[in-house]
Amino acid sequence: MSLLKGKFAIVTGAASARGLGKATAKLFADHGATVAILDLDADAAKAAAADLGAEHVGLACNVTDKAACDAAVADLNKRWGRIDILVNNAGITQPLKIMEIGPGNYDAVLDVNLRGTLYMSQAVIPGMREQKSGSIVNLSSVSAQRGGGIFGGPHYSAAKAGVLGLTKAMARELAPSNIRVNAICPGFIATDITAGKLTPDMLGTIIESIPMGRAGEASDVAGCALFLASDLSSYCTGTEVDVNGGSLIH
Ligand code: NAD
Image (cartoon, rainbow, N blue to C red):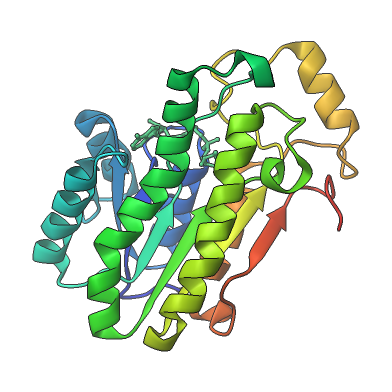
């Protein structure tokens, strides 16, 4: 099935080999989209795009840098003439307790997750408004909904709760332009975001708390991103979709 035939999509933070962004970019490409992978390192982004096929694009873009977001989108607009889909996937986390969060921790986690989502969205919105269509998908987290308690600290919960608020406010403001904005709240998904800091004990406790009894796979999240990016979800905007194996049922 080709749910995204002829569509042009950006996925940020999609160079990470086992990450949610890469799995999403691959599924989008399998469904006929032309995809741009934006990530910190140009070579890694290009290599990840090449994995999807020759027509896909890899660009260096630090999403915390507004000029870099605007430049990447200008480059893609020159190549493609339009952008239909933006997945704000770039994110970082840190397993800190409340009193351990220093100014640098706060800035790093809030900037990549929340500021980056704002800047990338601002970069694509003018073109989407002009073409009167677009779908923006933001990666929030179950941590935003249940107050952390999985891996990330309170600053991560706050950043991802900020992403939910931003998603809903953008959805309201952009709906008249036929631009839909939705969020995905993944539970615990086995990727490299834990950067070697997840102990076997922590993992055991997390898995025990998941009714489906397993960690999520990157493909579980990619499927949801495909639904939200495609016309299958054409009357959904401002939603938060849980992909968590039942770990938060509310
Ligand atoms: P990951 O660490 O595998 O990938 C994240 C990618 O973002 C990396 O390629 C990294 O280089 C990139 N990145 C970091 N800072 C960046 C910046 N400033 N500009 C551009 N790119 C940057 O992580 P993942 O597990 O695939 O997570 C993807 C998203 O899903 C994140 O927003 C994360 O917070 C969210 N999420 C993940 C989980 C999980 O369990 N894995 C759960 C809930 C939410």
